[in-house]
Length: 146
Image 1 (cartoon, rainbow, N blue to C red):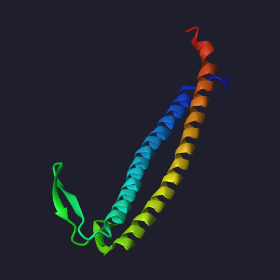
Image 2: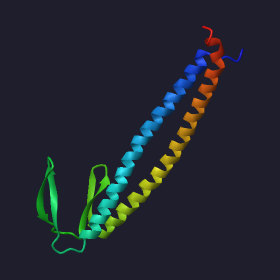
Image 3: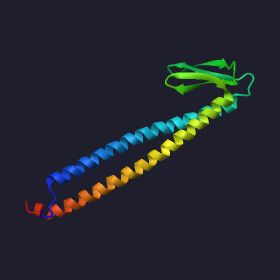
Image 4: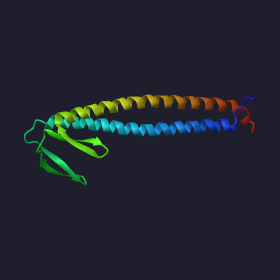
């Protein structure tokens, strides 16, 4: 071979780049969803802390379409928490808080792993870009006379 990049080689690099780029975009969306879940866990823990010892806690309850009703909490020491798969359970506020903290920590670990994966994808994308640039520069002298 004369050292000139072939169309197939460049197309292969473009395909790899596009594949890695798509994976990175999908991963970024998933990371954003996990960050939102972490924030929701933190808000729920804060709400439990603020309300669990209140005798007559008042709250606004969302009823849909951006509308709320005033309500008094009947059992501020009890919390209903989602267990997953559309299953919820009522438990003490302390137990719910512990479960939410555990969930938040697990999500944070997953997010950390995803950050590492994102870094690896970024390195692969940069390597492909560098290789494509190098191959394109090798092919430019002949193309300048076309």
